[in-house]
Amino acid sequence: MQTTLNHLKESTELPELFMRSKEEKTLWRMLRRVSDKISIELDSVELDIATKVEEYRIKNVLIKINKDKREVYLIGSDDQKTVSLDTLQRNPSFVFRELVGLLGRES
Image 1 (tube, rainbow, N blue to C red):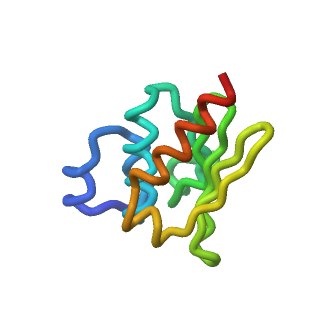
Image 2: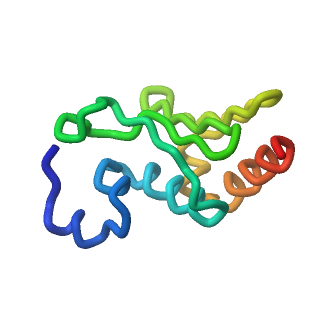
């Protein structure tokens, strides 16, 4: 994986180096507001080959980005929310409330 000097300077944690899009970084920072126990799944188990984040997991909630459909999926054990990437960009607080709502149900 290659990264730019700017990307390296902007990143505060190792997982951020694998986040290429603004949406990925927005979701990461949103999740970090809620917990420091976030797991991520990269597109390769080898760090040198990995180029992007496939999914995030916090507690029992799975978050996936589908760039082709321009959607974000918030998947809980008994509920699923689908939000457009446009909504994430324009109104991240809405997505944050949806996420917190799912996390509250999972506790």
